[in-house]
Length: 71
Image (cartoon, rainbow, N blue to C red; front, side, top):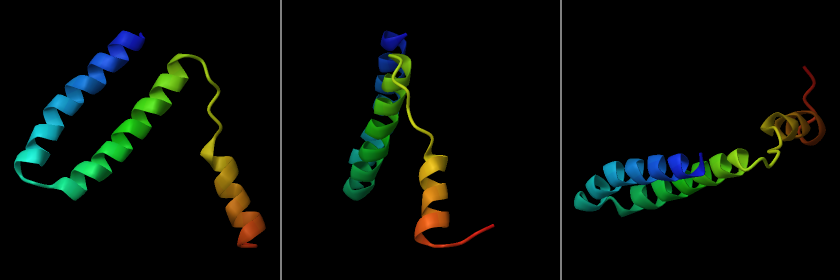
């Protein structure tokens, strides 16, 4: 399963990155790389069985406790 994940991400990178480099979109390439590596890391951690916390807990904390908005 890990090999399939790696092959998928390599294929996606080989499809997207050359056009960004050819058009000289280096800022877009850096943002793409950041999101791409984040997605790979999260998918890899999920495959190896690491429990990833829900982002809803953080959003709920932000809304209720920091912004003092009750719904």
